[in-house]
Length: 496
Ligand code: SF4
Image (cartoon, rainbow, N blue to C red):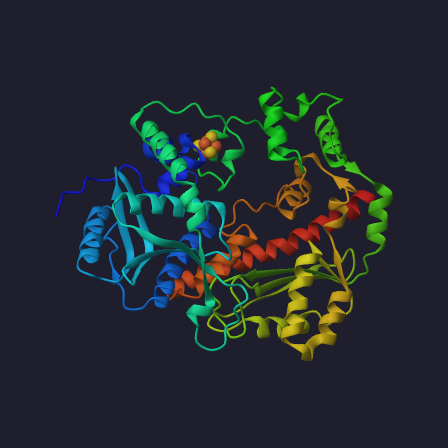
Protein backbone atom coordinates (compact mmCIF):
# COMPACT_ATOMS: atom_id res chain seq x y z
CA UNK A 1 0.00 0.00 0.00
CA UNK A 2 1.38 3.42 -0.97
CA UNK A 3 2.04 5.97 1.76
CA UNK A 4 -0.76 8.53 1.92
CA UNK A 5 0.39 11.92 3.23
CA UNK A 6 -1.77 13.85 5.68
CA UNK A 7 -4.43 15.88 3.92
CA UNK A 8 -4.32 19.68 3.63
CA UNK A 9 -8.05 20.26 3.20
CA UNK A 10 -11.04 18.27 4.39
CA UNK A 11 -14.67 18.58 3.35
CA UNK A 12 -15.50 20.77 6.34
CA UNK A 13 -12.51 23.09 5.88
CA UNK A 14 -13.33 23.30 2.17
CA UNK A 15 -16.91 24.36 2.97
CA UNK A 16 -15.51 26.88 5.47
CA UNK A 17 -13.15 28.29 2.83
CA UNK A 18 -16.00 28.54 0.32
CA UNK A 19 -17.86 30.76 2.76
CA UNK A 20 -14.85 32.90 3.64
CA UNK A 21 -11.11 32.45 3.15
CA UNK A 22 -10.42 34.44 6.30
CA UNK A 23 -12.49 31.94 8.27
CA UNK A 24 -10.24 29.16 6.94
CA UNK A 25 -7.13 31.13 7.93
CA UNK A 26 -8.47 31.81 11.43
CA UNK A 27 -9.55 28.19 11.86
CA UNK A 28 -6.08 26.91 10.99
CA UNK A 29 -4.03 29.59 12.76
CA UNK A 30 -6.19 31.08 15.53
CA UNK A 31 -8.61 28.33 16.48
CA UNK A 32 -8.95 29.78 19.99
CA UNK A 33 -10.76 32.82 18.56
CA UNK A 34 -13.80 30.72 17.61
CA UNK A 35 -17.12 31.53 19.27
CA UNK A 36 -18.53 29.06 21.78
CA UNK A 37 -20.78 26.45 20.21
CA UNK A 38 -24.37 26.65 21.45
CA UNK A 39 -26.29 23.71 22.87
CA UNK A 40 -28.53 23.62 19.80
CA UNK A 41 -25.51 23.54 17.42
CA UNK A 42 -23.98 20.69 19.44
CA UNK A 43 -27.27 18.81 19.25
CA UNK A 44 -27.34 19.34 15.49
CA UNK A 45 -23.89 17.72 15.09
CA UNK A 46 -24.88 14.75 17.26
CA UNK A 47 -28.16 14.34 15.43
CA UNK A 48 -26.28 14.39 12.08
CA UNK A 49 -24.01 11.54 13.20
CA UNK A 50 -26.92 9.49 14.59
CA UNK A 51 -28.89 9.91 11.37
CA UNK A 52 -25.88 8.89 9.27
CA UNK A 53 -25.66 5.65 11.25
CA UNK A 54 -29.40 5.05 11.00
CA UNK A 55 -29.41 5.54 7.22
CA UNK A 56 -26.77 2.82 6.87
CA UNK A 57 -29.67 0.46 7.59
CA UNK A 58 -31.08 1.20 4.11
CA UNK A 59 -28.05 -0.65 2.75
CA UNK A 60 -27.41 -3.34 5.35
CA UNK A 61 -24.34 -5.52 5.56
CA UNK A 62 -21.77 -2.87 4.65
CA UNK A 63 -18.23 -2.58 5.98
CA UNK A 64 -17.31 0.45 8.06
CA UNK A 65 -14.16 2.27 6.91
CA UNK A 66 -14.34 5.09 9.45
CA UNK A 67 -11.06 6.01 11.20
CA UNK A 68 -10.25 5.07 14.79
CA UNK A 69 -9.97 8.79 15.54
CA UNK A 70 -9.94 12.07 13.62
CA UNK A 71 -6.14 12.01 13.30
CA UNK A 72 -6.11 8.74 11.36
CA UNK A 73 -8.10 9.54 8.24
CA UNK A 74 -5.33 8.28 5.96
CA UNK A 75 -5.83 4.77 7.44
CA UNK A 76 -9.44 5.17 6.45
CA UNK A 77 -8.43 6.10 2.90
CA UNK A 78 -6.17 3.00 2.69
CA UNK A 79 -8.94 0.83 4.10
CA UNK A 80 -11.41 2.17 1.53
CA UNK A 81 -8.97 1.37 -1.31
CA UNK A 82 -8.52 -2.14 0.10
CA UNK A 83 -12.27 -2.70 0.44
CA UNK A 84 -12.90 -1.56 -3.13
CA UNK A 85 -10.11 -3.79 -4.41
CA UNK A 86 -11.30 -6.86 -2.53
CA UNK A 87 -14.81 -6.59 -3.97
CA UNK A 88 -16.74 -5.12 -1.02
CA UNK A 89 -20.03 -3.81 -2.35
CA UNK A 90 -21.25 -1.60 0.50
CA UNK A 91 -18.87 0.70 2.37
CA UNK A 92 -19.85 3.04 5.19
CA UNK A 93 -17.78 6.18 5.83
CA UNK A 94 -15.61 5.56 2.78
CA UNK A 95 -12.71 8.04 2.59
CA UNK A 96 -10.88 9.29 -0.49
CA UNK A 97 -7.97 11.64 -0.95
CA UNK A 98 -6.72 13.47 -4.01
CA UNK A 99 -3.96 16.06 -4.18
CA UNK A 100 -4.12 16.80 -0.45
CA UNK A 101 -7.93 17.01 -0.30
CA UNK A 102 -9.77 14.49 1.84
CA UNK A 103 -13.45 13.66 1.43
CA UNK A 104 -15.37 10.99 3.29
CA UNK A 105 -18.82 9.93 2.19
CA UNK A 106 -21.49 8.23 4.28
CA UNK A 107 -22.35 5.28 2.05
CA UNK A 108 -20.88 3.79 -1.15
CA UNK A 109 -22.80 1.04 -2.92
CA UNK A 110 -21.68 -1.10 -5.85
CA UNK A 111 -24.44 -2.45 -8.08
CA UNK A 112 -23.88 -4.20 -11.41
CA UNK A 113 -20.22 -3.13 -11.34
CA UNK A 114 -21.17 0.55 -10.92
CA UNK A 115 -20.59 2.71 -7.85
CA UNK A 116 -23.27 4.90 -6.26
CA UNK A 117 -22.42 7.45 -3.55
CA UNK A 118 -24.82 8.63 -0.83
CA UNK A 119 -24.35 11.48 1.63
CA UNK A 120 -26.83 11.57 4.52
CA UNK A 121 -28.17 14.88 5.87
CA UNK A 122 -30.34 15.58 8.88
CA UNK A 123 -32.57 17.87 6.84
CA UNK A 124 -35.89 17.80 5.04
CA UNK A 125 -34.52 18.85 1.66
CA UNK A 126 -31.41 19.35 -0.44
CA UNK A 127 -29.76 22.76 -0.06
CA UNK A 128 -27.11 24.59 -2.09
CA UNK A 129 -24.47 23.84 0.55
CA UNK A 130 -25.25 20.12 0.41
CA UNK A 131 -24.75 20.24 -3.35
CA UNK A 132 -21.39 21.98 -2.90
CA UNK A 133 -20.51 19.30 -0.34
CA UNK A 134 -21.44 16.56 -2.78
CA UNK A 135 -19.60 18.34 -5.61
CA UNK A 136 -16.38 18.20 -3.57
CA UNK A 137 -16.97 14.53 -2.75
CA UNK A 138 -17.58 13.74 -6.42
CA UNK A 139 -14.42 15.68 -7.37
CA UNK A 140 -12.19 13.83 -4.90
CA UNK A 141 -13.70 10.38 -5.53
CA UNK A 142 -13.54 10.59 -9.31
CA UNK A 143 -10.10 12.25 -9.37
CA UNK A 144 -8.89 9.38 -7.16
CA UNK A 145 -9.77 7.11 -10.06
CA UNK A 146 -13.18 5.70 -9.13
CA UNK A 147 -15.99 6.31 -11.61
CA UNK A 148 -19.30 7.23 -9.99
CA UNK A 149 -22.55 6.28 -11.69
CA UNK A 150 -24.53 8.59 -9.41
CA UNK A 151 -24.31 10.69 -6.26
CA UNK A 152 -27.33 11.40 -4.06
CA UNK A 153 -28.27 13.20 -0.89
CA UNK A 154 -30.26 11.10 1.53
CA UNK A 155 -32.55 13.35 3.59
CA UNK A 156 -35.63 12.96 5.75
CA UNK A 157 -39.08 12.60 4.26
CA UNK A 158 -41.39 14.93 6.21
CA UNK A 159 -44.51 13.15 4.86
CA UNK A 160 -43.53 9.96 6.65
CA UNK A 161 -45.65 9.12 9.69
CA UNK A 162 -44.21 6.62 12.09
CA UNK A 163 -46.31 3.51 12.63
CA UNK A 164 -44.53 1.04 14.87
CA UNK A 165 -40.92 0.30 13.95
CA UNK A 166 -39.12 2.85 11.76
CA UNK A 167 -39.36 2.01 8.06
CA UNK A 168 -36.07 3.38 6.80
CA UNK A 169 -36.94 3.30 3.12
CA UNK A 170 -40.00 5.47 3.83
CA UNK A 171 -38.33 7.67 6.45
CA UNK A 172 -35.50 8.65 4.10
CA UNK A 173 -35.56 9.98 0.56
CA UNK A 174 -32.60 9.86 -1.82
CA UNK A 175 -32.32 12.77 -4.26
CA UNK A 176 -29.78 12.54 -7.05
CA UNK A 177 -27.63 15.66 -7.37
CA UNK A 178 -25.40 14.29 -10.12
CA UNK A 179 -26.19 16.94 -12.73
CA UNK A 180 -25.65 19.92 -10.39
CA UNK A 181 -22.50 18.31 -9.01
CA UNK A 182 -20.97 17.76 -12.45
CA UNK A 183 -21.71 21.37 -13.41
CA UNK A 184 -19.72 22.54 -10.38
CA UNK A 185 -16.49 20.61 -10.98
CA UNK A 186 -14.55 23.55 -12.40
CA UNK A 187 -15.71 25.76 -9.55
CA UNK A 188 -14.56 23.14 -7.04
CA UNK A 189 -11.13 23.07 -8.66
CA UNK A 190 -10.84 26.87 -8.41
CA UNK A 191 -12.04 26.93 -4.81
CA UNK A 192 -9.57 24.23 -3.80
CA UNK A 193 -6.73 26.24 -5.34
CA UNK A 194 -7.84 29.40 -3.48
CA UNK A 195 -8.06 27.50 -0.20
CA UNK A 196 -4.59 26.01 -0.69
CA UNK A 197 -3.08 29.44 -1.41
CA UNK A 198 -4.72 30.78 1.76
CA UNK A 199 -3.36 27.91 3.82
CA UNK A 200 0.15 28.35 2.46
CA UNK A 201 0.16 32.07 3.31
CA UNK A 202 0.86 33.13 6.89
CA UNK A 203 -0.88 36.47 6.27
CA UNK A 204 -4.56 36.80 7.09
CA UNK A 205 -6.63 37.32 3.91
CA UNK A 206 -7.96 40.91 3.80
CA UNK A 207 -11.64 39.96 4.00
CA UNK A 208 -14.05 42.54 5.42
CA UNK A 209 -17.25 41.62 7.24
CA UNK A 210 -20.14 41.13 4.84
CA UNK A 211 -23.16 39.06 3.90
CA UNK A 212 -20.88 36.05 3.75
CA UNK A 213 -20.62 36.15 7.58
CA UNK A 214 -24.19 34.78 7.65
CA UNK A 215 -24.42 32.67 4.51
CA UNK A 216 -24.75 29.78 4.31
CA UNK A 217 -23.94 29.52 8.03
CA UNK A 218 -23.52 32.03 10.80
CA UNK A 219 -19.71 32.16 10.95
CA UNK A 220 -18.15 31.00 14.21
CA UNK A 221 -15.56 33.82 14.13
CA UNK A 222 -18.11 36.63 14.31
CA UNK A 223 -17.17 37.40 17.91
CA UNK A 224 -13.66 38.15 16.63
CA UNK A 225 -14.35 39.87 13.29
CA UNK A 226 -17.31 41.92 14.48
CA UNK A 227 -15.82 43.04 17.78
CA UNK A 228 -15.16 46.57 16.53
CA UNK A 229 -18.68 47.12 15.23
CA UNK A 230 -19.97 49.67 17.76
CA UNK A 231 -23.17 49.64 19.82
CA UNK A 232 -25.87 51.47 17.89
CA UNK A 233 -24.48 50.30 14.56
CA UNK A 234 -26.63 50.22 11.44
CA UNK A 235 -26.73 46.42 11.80
CA UNK A 236 -29.27 46.97 14.57
CA UNK A 237 -31.68 48.51 12.06
CA UNK A 238 -34.78 46.34 11.77
CA UNK A 239 -36.09 44.84 8.56
CA UNK A 240 -33.27 45.88 6.25
CA UNK A 241 -31.78 43.53 3.70
CA UNK A 242 -28.24 42.51 4.53
CA UNK A 243 -27.09 43.70 1.10
CA UNK A 244 -28.50 47.22 1.77
CA UNK A 245 -26.88 47.32 5.20
CA UNK A 246 -23.48 46.39 3.80
CA UNK A 247 -23.89 48.92 1.00
CA UNK A 248 -24.42 51.60 3.66
CA UNK A 249 -21.52 50.24 5.69
CA UNK A 250 -19.21 50.29 2.67
CA UNK A 251 -20.25 53.88 1.97
CA UNK A 252 -18.97 54.86 5.43
CA UNK A 253 -22.24 54.90 7.41
CA UNK A 254 -21.46 52.72 10.43
CA UNK A 255 -23.82 53.92 13.13
CA UNK A 256 -27.48 54.87 13.27
CA UNK A 257 -26.40 58.38 14.28
CA UNK A 258 -24.55 58.77 10.97
CA UNK A 259 -27.60 58.02 8.80
CA UNK A 260 -28.44 61.20 6.81
CA UNK A 261 -31.91 62.67 7.50
CA UNK A 262 -33.05 62.17 3.91
CA UNK A 263 -31.93 58.52 3.76
CA UNK A 264 -34.89 56.38 2.58
CA UNK A 265 -35.97 54.33 5.63
CA UNK A 266 -39.16 52.39 6.33
CA UNK A 267 -41.54 53.41 9.16
CA UNK A 268 -39.99 51.16 11.84
CA UNK A 269 -36.45 52.08 10.80
CA UNK A 270 -37.28 55.82 10.90
CA UNK A 271 -38.80 55.47 14.36
CA UNK A 272 -35.85 53.38 15.48
CA UNK A 273 -33.32 55.93 14.21
CA UNK A 274 -35.24 58.90 15.62
CA UNK A 275 -35.64 57.44 19.13
CA UNK A 276 -32.15 56.00 19.14
CA UNK A 277 -30.76 59.46 18.40
CA UNK A 278 -33.00 61.11 21.01
CA UNK A 279 -32.37 58.22 23.44
CA UNK A 280 -36.05 58.37 24.35
CA UNK A 281 -38.92 55.91 24.56
CA UNK A 282 -41.74 56.24 22.04
CA UNK A 283 -45.24 55.56 23.38
CA UNK A 284 -48.47 55.69 21.42
CA UNK A 285 -50.55 56.36 24.55
CA UNK A 286 -53.91 55.87 22.89
CA UNK A 287 -52.79 52.61 21.28
CA UNK A 288 -51.40 51.24 24.56
CA UNK A 289 -54.57 52.34 26.35
CA UNK A 290 -56.67 50.42 23.86
CA UNK A 291 -54.47 47.35 24.20
CA UNK A 292 -54.66 47.42 28.01
CA UNK A 293 -58.41 47.93 27.90
CA UNK A 294 -58.67 44.70 25.90
CA UNK A 295 -57.00 42.67 28.69
CA UNK A 296 -59.36 41.12 31.23
CA UNK A 297 -58.09 39.98 34.61
CA UNK A 298 -57.49 37.41 35.95
CA UNK A 299 -54.66 36.85 33.48
CA UNK A 300 -52.61 33.78 32.72
CA UNK A 301 -49.17 34.36 31.18
CA UNK A 302 -48.40 31.28 29.13
CA UNK A 303 -45.44 29.96 27.15
CA UNK A 304 -44.78 26.62 25.42
CA UNK A 305 -41.58 24.84 24.46
CA UNK A 306 -41.53 22.23 21.73
CA UNK A 307 -38.90 19.96 20.27
CA UNK A 308 -38.63 18.66 16.72
CA UNK A 309 -36.80 15.34 16.51
CA UNK A 310 -35.46 14.72 13.01
CA UNK A 311 -36.23 11.02 13.37
CA UNK A 312 -39.74 10.56 14.76
CA UNK A 313 -39.43 9.07 18.24
CA UNK A 314 -43.10 8.42 18.83
CA UNK A 315 -46.00 6.69 17.13
CA UNK A 316 -47.94 8.85 14.62
CA UNK A 317 -45.29 11.58 14.45
CA UNK A 318 -43.26 12.80 11.46
CA UNK A 319 -39.70 14.09 11.01
CA UNK A 320 -39.26 17.59 12.47
CA UNK A 321 -42.80 17.68 13.87
CA UNK A 322 -43.17 20.17 16.75
CA UNK A 323 -43.89 18.18 19.91
CA UNK A 324 -44.81 20.22 22.99
CA UNK A 325 -42.98 19.12 26.12
CA UNK A 326 -43.06 22.08 28.50
CA UNK A 327 -45.16 25.03 29.52
CA UNK A 328 -44.91 27.77 32.08
CA UNK A 329 -47.88 29.65 33.51
CA UNK A 330 -47.87 32.71 35.68
CA UNK A 331 -51.21 33.87 37.00
CA UNK A 332 -52.48 37.19 38.35
CA UNK A 333 -55.94 37.72 39.75
CA UNK A 334 -55.86 41.45 39.14
CA UNK A 335 -53.40 44.21 38.32
CA UNK A 336 -52.08 44.55 41.85
CA UNK A 337 -52.31 40.98 43.14
CA UNK A 338 -49.37 38.66 43.81
CA UNK A 339 -48.30 36.51 40.92
CA UNK A 340 -48.38 32.70 41.22
CA UNK A 341 -46.60 30.14 39.06
CA UNK A 342 -47.15 26.62 37.73
CA UNK A 343 -45.29 24.67 35.12
CA UNK A 344 -44.97 21.32 33.42
CA UNK A 345 -41.97 19.51 31.97
CA UNK A 346 -42.69 16.13 30.44
CA UNK A 347 -40.94 12.93 31.42
CA UNK A 348 -38.90 11.32 28.67
CA UNK A 349 -39.49 7.99 26.96
CA UNK A 350 -42.95 8.52 25.50
CA UNK A 351 -44.85 11.15 23.52
CA UNK A 352 -45.37 14.03 25.96
CA UNK A 353 -48.35 15.50 24.07
CA UNK A 354 -51.03 13.71 26.08
CA UNK A 355 -49.65 14.65 29.51
CA UNK A 356 -48.96 18.16 28.21
CA UNK A 357 -52.54 18.86 27.14
CA UNK A 358 -54.12 17.19 30.18
CA UNK A 359 -52.03 19.27 32.58
CA UNK A 360 -52.44 22.46 30.59
CA UNK A 361 -56.23 22.19 30.44
CA UNK A 362 -56.37 21.54 34.15
CA UNK A 363 -54.01 24.44 34.96
CA UNK A 364 -55.91 26.97 32.83
CA UNK A 365 -59.46 26.13 33.81
CA UNK A 366 -60.11 29.35 35.77
CA UNK A 367 -61.64 32.13 33.73
CA UNK A 368 -59.50 35.01 32.48
CA UNK A 369 -57.40 36.01 29.51
CA UNK A 370 -54.41 33.95 28.50
CA UNK A 371 -51.54 36.17 27.41
CA UNK A 372 -48.87 34.70 25.19
CA UNK A 373 -45.97 36.31 23.38
CA UNK A 374 -46.35 35.55 19.67
CA UNK A 375 -49.82 34.07 19.52
CA UNK A 376 -49.23 32.27 16.21
CA UNK A 377 -46.87 29.75 17.79
CA UNK A 378 -48.92 28.75 20.84
CA UNK A 379 -52.09 28.70 18.75
CA UNK A 380 -50.54 26.39 16.15
CA UNK A 381 -49.38 23.99 18.87
CA UNK A 382 -52.88 23.88 20.38
CA UNK A 383 -54.49 23.38 16.97
CA UNK A 384 -52.22 20.41 16.30
CA UNK A 385 -53.10 18.98 19.72
CA UNK A 386 -56.77 19.35 18.82
CA UNK A 387 -56.30 17.06 15.83
CA UNK A 388 -54.41 14.54 17.97
CA UNK A 389 -56.94 14.61 20.81
CA UNK A 390 -60.37 15.38 19.32
CA UNK A 391 -61.93 14.56 22.69
CA UNK A 392 -60.45 17.85 23.99
CA UNK A 393 -61.51 19.95 21.00
CA UNK A 394 -64.05 22.09 22.85
CA UNK A 395 -61.75 22.80 25.77
CA UNK A 396 -58.82 23.63 23.50
CA UNK A 397 -61.02 25.97 21.43
CA UNK A 398 -62.15 27.65 24.64
CA UNK A 399 -58.51 28.27 25.67
CA UNK A 400 -57.65 29.58 22.19
CA UNK A 401 -60.59 32.00 22.37
CA UNK A 402 -59.12 33.49 25.58
CA UNK A 403 -55.62 33.95 24.17
CA UNK A 404 -54.22 37.43 23.49
CA UNK A 405 -50.85 38.50 22.21
CA UNK A 406 -48.57 40.64 24.38
CA UNK A 407 -46.24 41.05 21.40
CA UNK A 408 -48.75 43.29 19.57
CA UNK A 409 -47.91 46.62 21.26
CA UNK A 410 -44.28 46.11 20.24
CA UNK A 411 -44.93 44.64 16.83
CA UNK A 412 -47.41 47.42 16.00
CA UNK A 413 -44.97 50.10 17.23
CA UNK A 414 -47.20 51.33 20.04
CA UNK A 415 -44.17 51.19 22.28
CA UNK A 416 -40.56 51.48 21.23
CA UNK A 417 -37.51 51.58 23.47
CA UNK A 418 -34.13 52.27 21.79
CA UNK A 419 -32.63 49.25 23.59
CA UNK A 420 -35.06 46.97 21.71
CA UNK A 421 -32.68 47.48 18.77
CA UNK A 422 -35.49 47.33 16.24
CA UNK A 423 -36.74 43.92 17.39
CA UNK A 424 -40.03 43.00 19.03
CA UNK A 425 -38.72 39.62 20.21
CA UNK A 426 -39.21 39.11 23.94
CA UNK A 427 -35.44 38.53 24.17
CA UNK A 428 -34.96 42.20 23.18
CA UNK A 429 -38.06 43.72 24.74
CA UNK A 430 -37.40 42.32 28.23
CA UNK A 431 -33.89 43.75 28.80
CA UNK A 432 -35.04 47.08 27.34
CA UNK A 433 -38.07 47.40 29.61
CA UNK A 434 -36.88 45.45 32.67
CA UNK A 435 -33.07 45.70 32.58
CA UNK A 436 -32.57 43.70 35.78
CA UNK A 437 -34.02 40.60 34.05
CA UNK A 438 -31.77 39.01 31.43
CA UNK A 439 -31.60 35.80 29.45
CA UNK A 440 -27.83 36.01 28.87
CA UNK A 441 -26.81 34.42 32.14
CA UNK A 442 -29.07 31.37 31.82
CA UNK A 443 -27.67 27.95 30.83
CA UNK A 444 -30.61 27.57 28.46
CA UNK A 445 -31.43 30.98 27.06
CA UNK A 446 -33.52 30.47 23.95
CA UNK A 447 -36.13 28.15 22.48
CA UNK A 448 -33.66 26.33 20.20
CA UNK A 449 -31.45 25.46 23.15
CA UNK A 450 -34.47 24.34 25.18
CA UNK A 451 -35.53 22.11 22.33
CA UNK A 452 -32.00 20.68 21.98
CA UNK A 453 -31.76 20.13 25.74
CA UNK A 454 -35.00 18.16 25.85
CA UNK A 455 -33.87 16.03 22.92
CA UNK A 456 -30.59 15.35 24.75
CA UNK A 457 -32.59 14.30 27.82
CA UNK A 458 -34.12 11.45 25.80
CA UNK A 459 -30.77 9.64 25.83
CA UNK A 460 -29.25 10.95 29.06
CA UNK A 461 -28.82 8.36 31.80
CA UNK A 462 -26.79 10.34 34.36
CA UNK A 463 -29.31 11.37 37.02
CA UNK A 464 -27.30 14.46 38.02
CA UNK A 465 -27.19 15.72 34.43
CA UNK A 466 -30.88 14.97 34.00
CA UNK A 467 -31.69 17.03 37.11
CA UNK A 468 -29.46 19.88 35.91
CA UNK A 469 -31.04 20.00 32.45
CA UNK A 470 -34.57 19.86 33.85
CA UNK A 471 -33.75 22.68 36.27
CA UNK A 472 -32.27 24.78 33.44
CA UNK A 473 -35.41 24.18 31.34
CA UNK A 474 -37.61 25.14 34.26
CA UNK A 475 -35.65 28.37 34.88
CA UNK A 476 -35.70 29.36 31.21
CA UNK A 477 -39.40 28.84 30.55
CA UNK A 478 -40.33 30.43 33.88
CA UNK A 479 -38.39 33.54 32.90
CA UNK A 480 -40.30 33.71 29.61
CA UNK A 481 -43.63 34.03 31.41
CA UNK A 482 -42.30 36.13 34.28
CA UNK A 483 -40.90 38.45 31.61
CA UNK A 484 -44.44 38.82 30.28
CA UNK A 485 -45.74 39.66 33.77
CA UNK A 486 -43.14 42.40 34.14
CA UNK A 487 -43.56 43.74 30.61
CA UNK A 488 -47.30 44.10 31.14
CA UNK A 489 -46.61 45.88 34.44
CA UNK A 490 -44.34 48.33 32.63
CA UNK A 491 -47.03 49.02 30.04
CA UNK A 492 -49.61 49.50 32.78
CA UNK A 493 -47.27 51.73 34.79
CA UNK A 494 -46.36 53.99 31.86
CA UNK A 495 -49.96 54.72 31.12
CA UNK A 496 -50.94 55.83 34.62
S1 SF4 B 1 -16.91 36.62 10.62
FE1 SF4 B 1 -17.15 37.10 8.46
S2 SF4 B 1 -15.23 38.00 7.82
FE2 SF4 B 1 -14.85 36.99 9.77
S3 SF4 B 1 -14.12 34.99 9.21
FE3 SF4 B 1 -16.29 34.81 9.48
S4 SF4 B 1 -17.19 35.10 7.48
FE4 SF4 B 1 -15.08 35.83 7.39
